[in-house]
Image 1 (tube, rainbow, N blue to C red):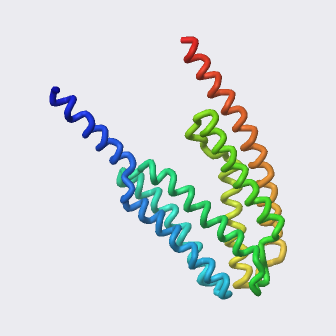
Image 2: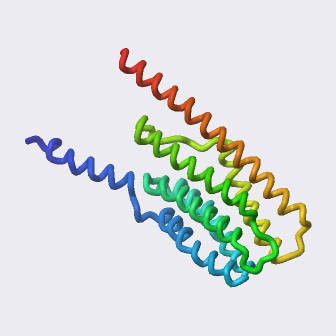
Image 3: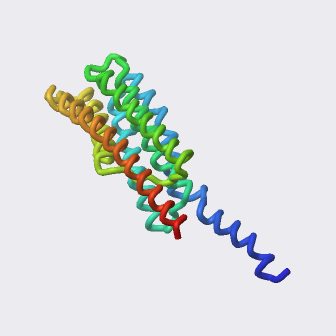
Amino acid sequence: MSTDERTAPKKIRLKVEEKLRPLTLPNFITLLRMAIVPFFVIAVAEGNFRLALWIFLIAGLTDALDGWLARKLDMQSVIGAFLDPIADKVLVVTAYVTLTIPMGQEIVIPLWLAILALFRDFLIMLVVLVLYLVEDIRRFPPSVLGRACTFMHVGTIAVVLIANLALVPWWIPELCFYLSFSLVILSGFNYIYRSSRFIEEVRAEKAAENQN
């Protein structure tokens, strides 16, 4: 057996480990963002909306920081690519549900909006699972509408927290609720449409490869 043949498995293992790299600084910050979510819930439950707002802002800063560090320090990894959106979704979903439950606060997120937002997320996860299991599609980038919906959810959470701390005109939270509702519906239908088109494109590419 030649030297190259003996070292090939080791090189492959090193490449896999390099790609995964679970214990990087950006991944640690991402995990930290997930770890502070329970403290957000506790702060809201105790009526400490100032602390809840600070926790939410810190979580947002860590979201920007871990991505910047991953690019700056060349620490991008497969695990980080999965962890980052999961951490974002855990924070937003938890905040939405927590702020929907009346705990003595003056402003709450309407139940109908929370149900629609959660159903949209469930639908997206179901579609992703189907794409992976049936079509072996491992990557499906978010759309502009999807990013806008997430941004509006974050804005709505921030406005509700602020509205429970200071006097905010009644129409501002209402505007956030209905803008979020519109983007939930639009991005949901857009996601289904893009999924069907994406499947057609992947099947056409596979058919062309088989013919060649």
